[in-house]
Figure 1 (cartoon, rainbow, N blue to C red):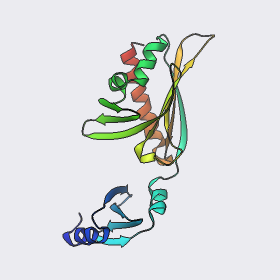
Figure 2 (figure 1 turned 90 degrees about the vertical axis):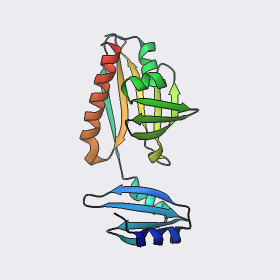
Figure 3 (figure 1 turned 90 degrees about the horizontal axis):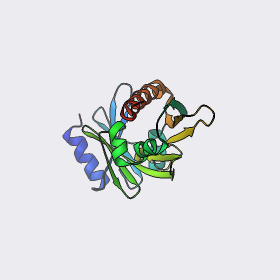
Figure 4 (figure 1 turned 180 degrees about the horizontal axis):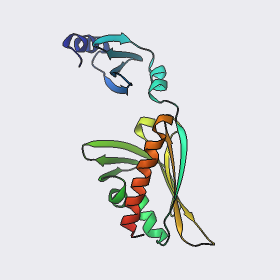
Length: 188
């Protein structure tokens, strides 16, 4: 917990333009405050000047690995599948509880948590890709691509996602669950 002295020091040092960054460490939770290209960290109730904002971004955007997961969807209509992965109504059926869309910004809502993302690219009936707001100014994104199997018939969905190496298995389990929900909604 941040003590009153640390809060007062940060407010005085940062001159009222504060942005809060959360960095979850193995042992401690640290809070990072940004002001005028300076980063102040509260760690065990001590305040430290950390680094420039660019260096802080490198710390918070750890290296991630690309994941590509393909899921068979057998007999479903491509237009129905496209609506499920590209519209706010469709996404709220299986991906999150609610989706709010304003222009190219999508806000995905789960219980009491919101996660904004931006639409990067879309080709109707083919793919849609987003970038989480937390990954802004990086090459990380997630994409949902429809794969048509001409010979065997049927469709697959190819998920491209980026995850930290230690989160890889959790991401795979999450996508397995999400695609199970999508299959149930599609009736396949």
